[in-house]
Every structure is written in C-alpha cells, then in structure tokens.
Image 1 (spheres, rainbow, N blue to C red):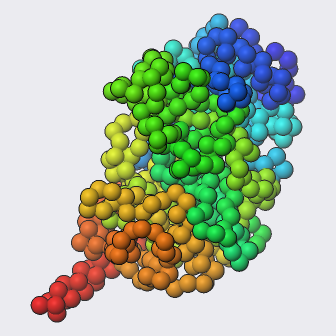
Image 2: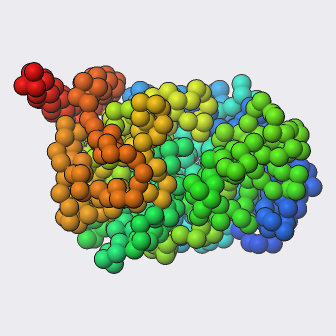
Image 3: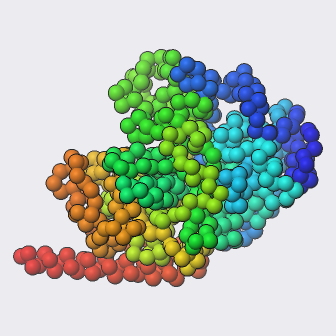
Length: 599
C-alpha cells in the first residue's frame, strides 16, 4: 500500500488493515482504467455477469445472497453516547456495546481478500457544501457502485487535502450471516461500521448512512437540512423555472416524479436529484439545495417506458443491475417492465439464478431489484446538478402511499403547519425494507429509517429553520395512490402528475386560488386542470374529499405517535395537532347541521 498524503487518512487505513488483515490494499483513484480492471475481475469470479453488449452496452448483473436483498432496519443502530439522543424510532446500541459486540467481527474479516480504500465526495466538486467520506470495503461490487453514485477517487482526495474532517466508513461482507449482520452509526465521531451484508442500502455507506443518518446530525449542529428528497426544476409556459424538493418513502414514486415527462404542453422538467437533498440557507434567504449524489440506485420493478421513460433510457447502457431476471438473449427483465408481456418469456433466469418461464409461481425479479446508473445518463438531467451554491427551493412536497383519507394534494397554511404535515406523514410499507408490505406506518418526512438522532429534536430543528428564511418555501402534501370504492387508483399518475405540479407552481407564484379544508388548502374545481382526463363526472369530489370522521381518528393517531417523543416533542407541534382537532370538530358539526337541514 502506498502511503496516503493525508496523515489522518493514512493512519486510519493502516489501523483498519491491521485488524482486518487483507491480502492486499488498493487505494482507488476513480480512473477508467481502474474500473475496467475491476469489472474484468468481477466477471471472472462471478460477482458480475456481463449482459448482452449489443443491447445493453457495458452493463452487468449482480446477484446478492437471498438473505441479503434489502435494508435491514432491525439490524441498523445509532450508537450515540446517550440513548435519548437516538430517540424512540431508532435502534440504539451504546458505543461500548458496539465495541464489544460488533468490533470483534472485523477481526481478520478480510483475510484472503482485497481491501479497497474508496475516497468519495458528496456534492458538486466546487460546492462549499460538499463533504468528503472514505469507505473501506472488501467488496468490489461496492467499489463499482460508489464510482457511479459519488464523485469518487482523486477528486475527493484533492478536496480533503490535509484535513481530518471526513466520514469514516468501514464495510465488510463478513460471512453474510444475518446473525452477524450489523450497521452501526456513531454520530459523535462521524463513523459507520457495516458487516455481514453486501446489499446496496447496507453496504454503500456514502448513501443512506453518510448522506442521511450522519449528515442529518451534522445538519442539525450546523443549521442546514439533510433530507430524503428529490430535487426537480419545472419550467412552465411563462418561462419561469421553479425548483421543488419532495420527500416520499422508498417505492412511492419518487424517482418517477424526479424524471417526470409532462403530459401538458409547454412544461419542461429537469432532474437535479432523485433521492437525497442537502439544503442550506442561501445569501438570498432561500433554501438552496444540492444533490450530494452523482448517480441513481433506483427500484427496477415497475419501471417501464410507460411509468418512467427517462429511467428506462438512462439504464440502456453503462448500468449495474442487482437481483433482476435475465432473458435468454442476455437482457435484464423485471415485473412491470413490459406491460404487453407481463410474465416474461420461457428460459429466463430469475434473480436467484434459476431457469424459469411464464408459468412460474414466484416473481422472476426480486421486488426490491435495483439499477445503478449515472444521473448524467438521464435525459432530463439538469445543469443545476453541478450548481455549487445549489438551486433555490420554492416548494417542499411531502407524500406517501395512502389508499384512503389523504386527498390528491393540499397546501399547508404556514411553515409550522407544513412541518406538522411532514412530521405526521403516514405511508404504507413497500419492499424496499425487509418486513411485511402494505402496512400503514408513520414515516415523518420520509426519514423514519434515516434520521440519525432523536426525531423529536429533528422536528425542533425543522421548526427552527423557518425563521432563518426570508423566503420560506410553501409546503404541500400529495397522495398519488388514493383508491376508489372498487380498489382502483383514482388518479392516473405518471406524466399526468404535472397537473398537480402546475397547481403548486401557480400557488407559489400567487396565480391561483384555493379552497380551505380542515387539512389545509386544496384546489378549487377550476383551479386544477382535469381537462382531457377520462375520470368520470365526480372526479374532483373523489380526489379531494376530506372525511371529517376519518380524520378524527387520524388526528388521534397523530397524537399517539407524537407522544412517543415525550419531552423532546416541540410544543409547536402539539399546538398544530390541537388546531387540527378543532378543525375536525368544526367540520363534523357543520356536516351534522347540513344533514339536519336536509331533512
């Protein structure tokens, strides 16, 4: 191993090598020559399967262990010095316990393997808000993904210089045993340990571990926001470009919205980021957002030319696919990819490596199958991706997957009310995390699995950001997944979502009115463009009905959830919950009076 110029990094790398005892150590430089050699090695040892080069140039398939296919939230720990600092929504392990329980698993874990040292930069190279991290790993798959997902190699070392300020990530596949699988975050020392998993969400430490769990702590301490949000710019027919950030739990259409192809003429959508957003207060008094990532680690299943044409075009070359199926001609396949041929073809190889046909009883691709691809390959990528100061955020959108209750869209009445809307967000679980799917759970700001400290303090931090902003963003809530009585989706979604974005943009610029409800402001019947949609005469009422009886129950569930934070819960959110209860009571009384009058 060559000596690293940064003495702090050099010392840390040597200390880890002494414990993990790899056969050799490679300092990654991020060059094309380096990745080509690594890919050749992985194809030779079976880590990568090369796909049909004429149809998917320079693209590969990786199959993870069947027990290692999603984030393992139950094995993910915040190892803060004090348990209360982790809060009730995180698993906590003391640093002392982690040292005695987890650290021994790293002893000689890299024997017979190569230890890769991967310096990476989160954010545009010239941004003052970009941050450096270094991941040590024994997985070549992780290295290949980090090269796509971050600005990796020498560019990060140049930014680091002689500084000791970098996130330290240590990852090993270990023996892939779920019994010896842990992901430990140490907020006070900006360190992550991950062992026993090769799945991206557990092993790509730059992503959720650094960019959200540790960065959220850093953001709290320094007065900015690290969020699980897409960033999108929309240019309307008037020539105005409005930037929005949006938080959705995994599997709820976030990537599709980030790459939206508008159904309405005159609109242009620019993708700045599809998953993570760092927002600082700019000199103009607005939130300025950068995307710390350079690539996309997207869910493949359900992605098609209908649902997300830009994603399909992006993954057509230079892509890594994880746990998808493969057709006999060597091309990737997953459920939902080809609506005309939903069961695929005979002779496919499924995500476990078994030959299957259309008569199979299990999915051919794992429900959480992924693609890794550079954001620059997305046809809708915007120049703002490299804007050092970040793009100005005029609107923030919260949303989840709800079959009932939540209307298509509503606007919060104030910044504090918007924080309450995000704090009490509920969504139904998907396959992105292990466990049952379709179960409603509170997922505040879509950060439940990713906030690196007490979520009560996180709410307080959000509320404190409002007064710092001369121009605070408007806050909205959307629900693309509302269902009718027959269980079908009421809203067509996909490119038609631009109609909802149109209303939000018009609200931001003061160009349209709204109707007040117990939840906030919703479009008037003429305020949202439903022209040309075959949705029936009662479409507006179905999409924007707010049932006071249902929300009485929902308000109580909000209070029960908020009370779990005890003394850490900000009083402002208690007041917002009380205001919701009062509005619900008024709406119920008004509905009762209307029934009496009707008789």
